[in-house]
Image (cartoon, rainbow, N blue to C red):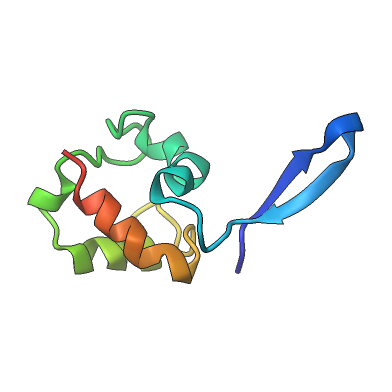
Length: 93
């Protein structure tokens, strides 16, 4: 299911946009993950993500992104963006 974003155009008119397939992993993180994992990947409600690649494989990160884990719900990242997002998170140092 696509993420729907409400944005205001000039004049205050609201428009809907969906998370695009061309969104960068960093943009997706800022949009969907930062509130739980922190602005510097330090954790908060969710665990710290720096160094997650030392503990989990890319496939394991992809599984967590796709299916959720603990309090993290599934489906926060659109399917077409999961591979790039898993690589991005896995590479955080």
